[in-house]
Image (cartoon, rainbow, N blue to C red; front, side, top):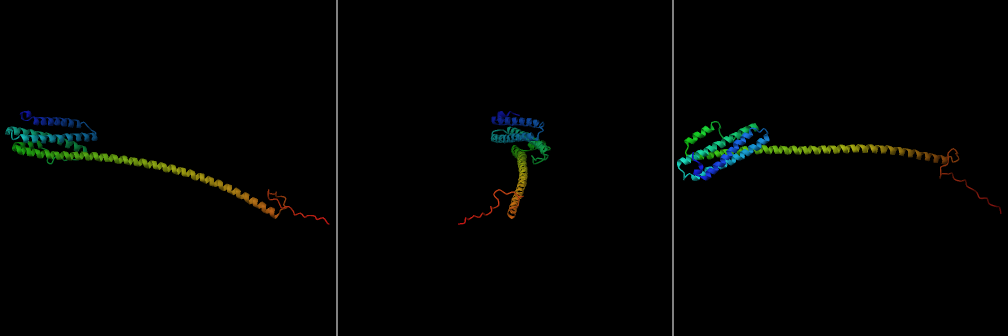
Length: 261
């Protein structure tokens, strides 16, 4: 195959960028095989998905450049460029299939990255390439790239949804943990208040008992004083009962002696 730089420097530059992305995808999937952590796998799959999207964009740019040069190139050159584009599409589809396999193994469900059977995919493309005109090949390639783009979008959506679910779950767990902590603190405060109230009730009970004893003693004293007063009034000449200070019996009335004139 002739060098693309001899046909177009722009095509050669795009082809070089696509080759670099293919090497990065190959190395990325090789590293992904050794990763066991699911979160790290998700991040790596997302990075590889972005590389596949960039690769798909470059292939479309390559196709546009081929169409611009089609009227200046001969039939053989146009056929070479169409085969080169088909080769790029096949390689990109192989990496998309790998991504589907890893996503299915990780999520335990099938992520439909292609609309159609993948088995015998390369043989079918070879057959189509041999039986189609250049325009048909380019149209077919565009359809395949659109399908690949849709598949990548669906896969990326699944990855984003998985990350969002994990983030929401972590936030919910954090909120529940904080709520449980607040409940525990409130229970501690209630327990402390109940303990203080119990102590206060006991102190009030002791004060009430003391006050009752004092009131009973004062009542007995008042009753005794009243009894003494009553006895003194009824029988003031009773010598067995001492006089209460301030309550001495009244002095006998004295009569003044008058001198006879």
